[in-house]
Length: 78
Image 1 (tube, helix red, strand yellow):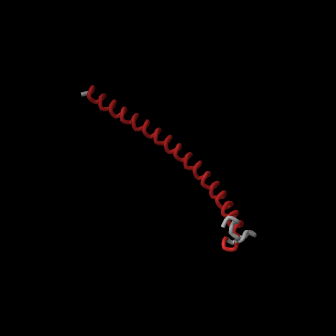
Image 2: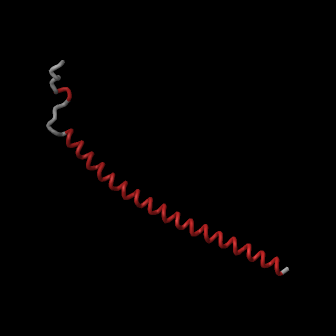
Image 3: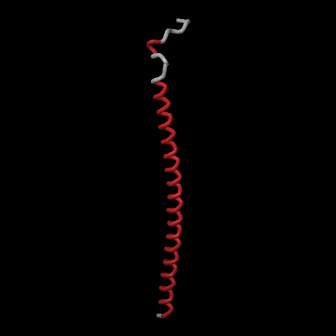
């Protein structure tokens, strides 16, 4: 019965080793995903600032000295 007991202990050790490897892989995956998410958040924040800037520019064009389309004289070929 002792050899059978060793086999059970060895099986348990193999299972523990496999679980430890899976856990280490999952930790690395979580770290990689966290880094990717952090990078994306930084890019998103940067794009929001750029978008606000562009919206301000477009609003500035609307209130400029440009005439409305209805006030424009037609081009000479009409």
